[in-house]
Image (spheres, rainbow, N blue to C red):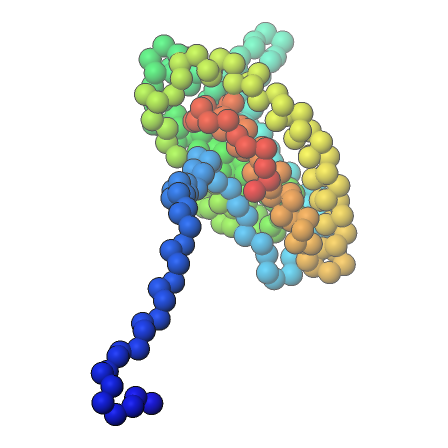
Length: 235
């Protein structure tokens, strides 16, 4: 308490907090760009059809024949006095490679053909791997989602497509072992669906991941839509 007659002295202000130590600014975080191919399959929340699953090796024959004709590249007919063949389809690889090499162009309608054929084959593959029980459509997306972007051919290398198949060899070696695991997973899932109606989610994600990895390698080495080396990843 202040005594009478003494001058007023204001209280001392509280001490200022010490300055924090200097920290250099962190570099801006950059998320890695997504690979220019995406693939996913909707996990079936409902019980899968046991009859369709049990007889899948028979059910798939009609659509499998169509897929084989489209993907084989040619059809040949031979007789005693004649022999002829014609182009039937298949992924356009050599024409695209030559066009990139000499003209540095990727014709849009070639790209659209490769995209739609890849989507159709992905639906047939998902059906064969028991991931879905809807019969594969020839044109509708259904529950199998595959997409890749139309490339800017001016940004693609001229010479790299010639050796991409060689650069992809490490991926194919790894995928050989991964596909063994995928086949085992499908066999286990076949029994699981017959008894429970469900595809075990961990096995489902693994099989989808192997297919996704394979499609990325194909996009790089066969479809030639990107020069970006595919990641060694199931994600």
